[in-house]
Length: 123
Image 1 (tube, rainbow, N blue to C red):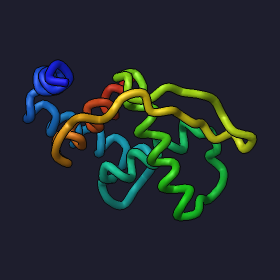
Image 2: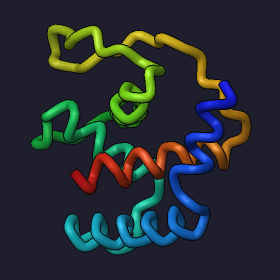
Image 3: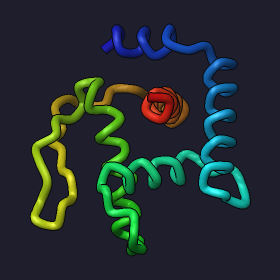
């Protein structure tokens, strides 16, 4: 439990994370010609669409939430929180939770997701 927290704290200084996150938001805004900078939810939504592989349609409110869940599972899979179990008949990916998410506080959880998004989109 504490090893995970130490890894997160040691992986990127707060100012580095803020700087990298702002740069990434600007790149996404410019790439997709958005009027304003996307927030964490918006970027998770885009990652979910990419992972689903279905770019040419609109999504219901529930599907948008599902896409953000797809993104979170994708990002946290390598940390050992989820295991990919396959796709359903509609092509949606599914994961099984492997271990509990032990980080406390919304800010810590958001920072972990931001670090994982930065790594994911900088590949």
